[in-house]
Length: 289
Image 1 (cartoon, one colour):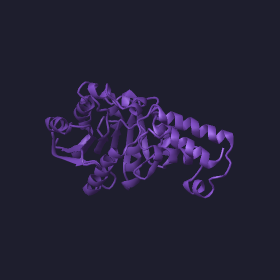
Image 2: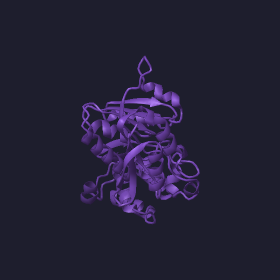
Image 3: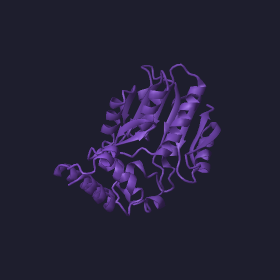
Image 4: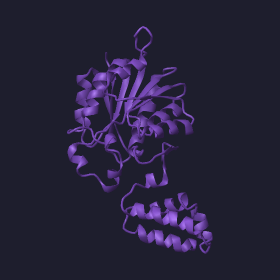
């Protein structure tokens, strides 16, 4: 099959898919090794049957809603590459707003070696980004899922990031012992950041097709979507220094509820930040002790 013929077939398969042109281009390039330049300059090049089969299989998967990121096996976040696949939440542009806000506020505080914990770390996109962009930082990534954990460790390694991984359930208070010295004294933590599961029961019942392929453990935040905000704010604040930063990604219409949780647990100077669409995507505050 010629490049032009394969390109046409992929376009036809994805004609009813939102952003089908972009998806097809990614599949041709990443799965078939066919760059846009080659397709434009050498449309009559003959391709090996195995290449065509892989590309068509990938396009058929995308046609039924299978996530493009899983098909490609990797995705970009904040200019860095992260390996992804079934069992791990896909990094999204929304979460870049969380990373950007955390980076700016941690740097503004000016600590020489800020200690940062990323809870519900998943692919590690937040932990790795903070470790790479905040000089001298000591970053910890906490994740429970056995399916997500290999992606987390691999992404830390492939991005050459200085991140310590801890496997466990963030609702288990024993995890905090990882941040105590031999005398039981807490190591001071400057920032806790998290993109926790925050979808409600109603939202889980109305998921877009491609989101249904992502792990429920990384999506469902209890009936009202606020379960993990309550747990993290109540339990993990113990590790924060006075004035330490706790910063969350939030779901739609959760700004007021998460703000109230923070205030009720002793946080002040509450702030918010929007994502690229202008929707409030970040809520955080400083621990008053």
